[in-house]
Length: 440
Image (cartoon, rainbow, N blue to C red; front, side, top):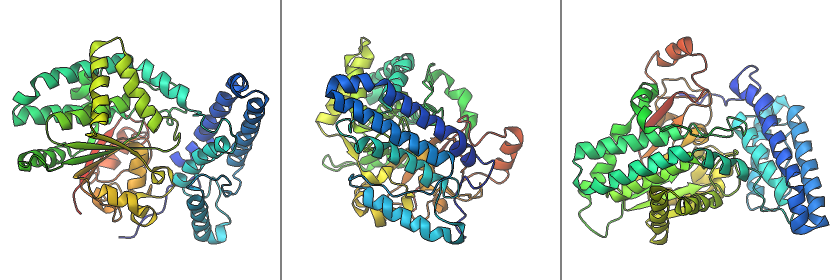
């Protein structure tokens, strides 16, 4: 089957077009405002130099916003960050694809490419301006989202500790039921995405655990049973104390979603369905709320310091998991490149080889789904494994709420029925999928 074309802003009226036209400029405006609001902080820390680089950064970002809004050609990066050459090679590749359409530009090129490029240019604006080169323009909104989700986090941490008390006595049926609950909490936690709300409040205010039954019909593809079959077989087959059962989680958003991922990870460890969890985050601030190493460590420290007993106990336990290396955190530049994942083996063979060591890889969220499927105009019924276009370092699954117009693996007529009954089903975040592929 031929690989379909990329989603792009050249398709006027599409979600890609609306995103590039409206949402991306809004995000840039918010970033400019954030830098402006911190100019006094820069001055206090770095004196006149801090004030000058703040102004320079604002000028750079304002120019970027103008380039986007007027559909200017994509330009090469000029910083010295280690991925710079890969980005500029990718621009050359995109230029070779454009042919008679002219140079790559914001509305003519693939949406996935130009959206990633915008976040990389924001990073360039900061890195080109020491001494503020470590400033995270999205940090405030990520922290705010965490604090505004406090009640939902307390409820989840309390529930999680109730599971841990009896985990050694659970039957297989009870164990699978608890796994399914935490998979669903992790799925719906993915609704809390600040890049979709253009940085506006998108925190989790209510307890998801009480809503899972009502939300279940909104899971369009539900391969949870396949995940259970795989991880429970690890446990049954793992009679050797020294053998390692590894699960990798490719993270999406910080805040409440990250806490749901940590709870799922600890459940897999505590139930002996895994002996080691490897987390993968971004190496730079990305898509407003994506998790960086700083966010990961900050979240665990916040949980530890919380006044609530079970939040604090979770933070202490999870810090212990990091210290004894049953949890390992990685960041790799590939996760913030514009490439689809089927290019990973060629572009970042070290990362691909690392993922091949896994027994199960869980990809969280919409951007990872777009990169898994190449962000293309697939028919809704194309099998998930086929849309991966050869990317299968290990058995893998995707937990994703739908916030972009790519979706595969549906039953015949399912997508058309949803389009008729709920025209925004692909982009509203109302629906979710738990999809799984084992073909290696």
